[in-house]
Length: 495
Ligand code: GLY
Ligand code: MN
Ligand code: MN
Image (tube, rainbow, N blue to C red; front, side, top):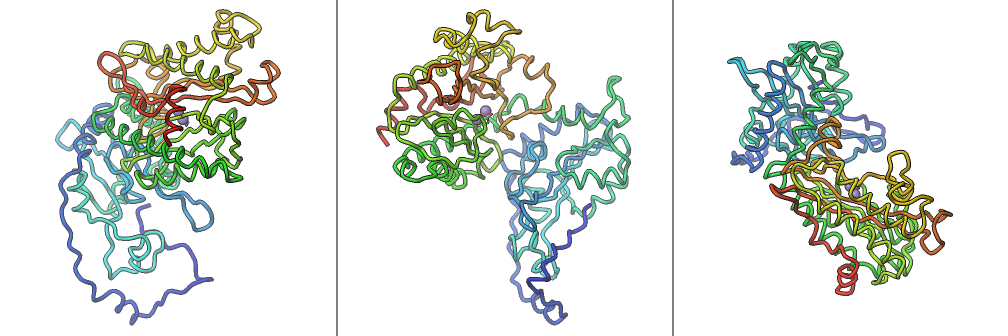
């Protein structure tokens, strides 16, 4: 598993000189590279604290957290590598993480706690073949990698060459726990060496420790964000705000192009790449009735004068934290009466949900509060066969025809963060200071929905903000991105 991968076969289309004369020549006469030992990066101390938390939950058990590999896009072209979120969380390594790295937390010899070692493929010498002949990882192809010492200083974690991980793997007991979904090939090779780890046998407080338990705990320790994470999410939100402003400034081009939605996506993507790593998820640029398709990411439609365009987009910054924000904008600058009616209803739902957020409420109350507004509005407009009150009964829910998705999800390294946390800590959980989640109600009236009057058909509105729970309430991190109908109109007019 830790061996240097052979380059993908390309011998039918190119050649690499193989003579010893060539190897000697290309491996020689390189100036020494000045290597500095950096000071530990800001997140190093935070990552150490996170490792201590997962350590305390799994005493005496070796924990293996791979960064993962790049995923194939087609043939020998990969998607850009992005480390698994659990790995990024526990190491503080973001976009600059070395592909294929593995974090191991081994029980400390001296008793309590774990010792962390980060195994990665360190810088190869210029006398290696990899240096010039390996398009996936060679320095000539993808640039230099840091040294073991540099990374140890940078992240504040002991480091070792990935080649040494084989010894660790061979010594793993069947009670070792592994983040299985980070790297399927790695998982398979561990399973082959050790026997399947799922259902590991160690008991903690009478509960068998399994890989699922590790995945759960790694999700749950992310439910409350630390100060570093909150700041990174703020940075992601700020960059996302700039991306929305860029899009509005481009509205003339958006309207002129036959695939105006793609112009929106491209403009936002430019900002995401310039100010951050990339987008945290595929941008939804959904104009007109496309807004009623919840995950419209094809974005190949025209944007017509008078349309509302729903843009759901987030910049992921270099530490890999992302924003997740939706604005629904009138491309011609003003909402018409029906568009504004729907918009204001969604805004009312969002504001009502936000108003209740504080430590001590349950997460599900946020959704329930938004739904009271959605039910009331759709009942008032005569779309429901029953009253709002009846519709809100668990076995009715007529209003959900117009908003089938949830109102909130945790946000962080993953756009849908903490995905493996237990239900009782998530939807049924109690909200705590330091949590960050979205509030994103919407109303979507499909173009062929016969339950609504014709003038509502094809209108889709979502307003999505990123919310930080504070000690005594909540802060809307994205409140600076205009969100009332009047503010949105003024924003477009200014642009
Ligand atoms: N952008 C996906 C979501 O809002 O959950
Ligand atoms: Mn969301
Ligand atoms: Mn979203």
